[in-house]
Amino acid sequence: MTPVTTPSPSRRAEGPSGTAEGPGPEEEQALQARFDAAVAAEERIEPRDWMPDAYRATLVRQIAQHAHSEIIGMQPEANWITRAPSLRRKAILMAKVQDEAGHGLYLYGAAETLGVSRQELLDKLHEGRQKYSSIFNYPTLTWADVGAIGWLVDGAAITNQVPLCRCSYGPYARAMVRICKEESFHQRQGYELLLALTRGTDAQRAMAQDAVDRWWWPSLMMFGPPDDESAHSARSMEWKIKRHSNDELRQRFVDICVPQAEALGLSLPDPDLRWNEERGHWDFGAIDWEEFRQVLKGNGPCNEQRLARRRAAHENGAWVREAAAAHAAKHAAGGPRRSATAPAARSRA
Ligand code: BYC
Image 1 (cartoon, rainbow, N blue to C red):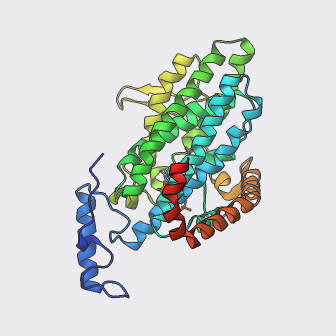
Image 2 (cartoon, protein in one colour):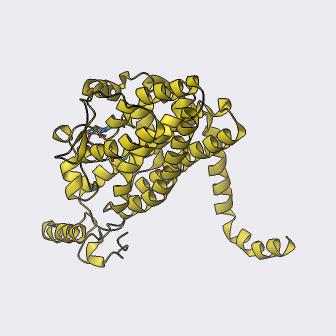
């Protein structure tokens, strides 16, 4: 990872000649030039550095969508916690679902460094004003879906997210390092689960194949629309938020999955899948972009259910937030007295 840079005063929002209204046009130009140079030099942009409004807005949009995806993504797999076939599988699945909650927290934290509050972002999610990943609007019909999600969905997530560890915005890049390590464990557990099924009975093999058949195409859609329809890619790549285009990462994912499917003894549901010697990549069939558009519009198989569940979870947790706020307020009021007694309390322990 590129070393983190300490913001120099000239990169800060309030420069030496800055006013309460912000920098004047000349100073703004200098700040923009400094920002461009920092991005070109692979330096990290940090929260207190000056940044263009559109860069900040793009980051808030992407990080918020990413955070929402992590917490909505807990639902399809949590559906199987009570029905996991063994204590070992249950413990693994619980740990994975908990990890996704943690990823959501790191990402909401990263978004907050850009001047938005978590509450504001959650309100937008609950009101359908911000998106989450299309993939979580599909149902988990059998136990094998847990394996297919781990192998394909987490596999796609890693392919997309490893380059985000080099994102130009420091807090997002650093959050991604830990997330990717955990996603890598998730991907392996999915692969191992499918391997166990494919080495099992005919019914287990059929269940694994059926899950892969249903999750393959939605996993390819996770990478976003094709490059020529991707509204944000060019700008995000200029700013080094994104390092590769949607189609590049999708191709990388297909190339990784084909040999893994062979090793699992499973087929991928695409008759057009063919090795292209000239390109050095696997060719694959046409993606149903109309399905993708419908899912984004809220018409996927589980959109309503996912949002309703999320809103209910938020409402049911109101008392925890209120209690935490009351606790914090109480301790803030009694802060100095508490710190004076703290050593004595420790020595009695
Ligand atoms: N689903 O210009 P584009 C996980 C939207 S979490 C829904 O290419 P961009 C996991 C896009 O937002 C997985 N919407 O956009 C969790 C934009 O709409 P707006 C989440 C999508 O941002 C738990 C419009 O389409 N990963 O893996 O340059 C358990 C045009 O697209 C989707 C991340 O969020 C989609 N699939 O590129 C297990 C990674 N694709 O905002 C696993 C971070 C596109 O204009 N995000 N849209 O209304 C990214 O890397 C990028 O945001 C994307 C899209 C590649 C997803």
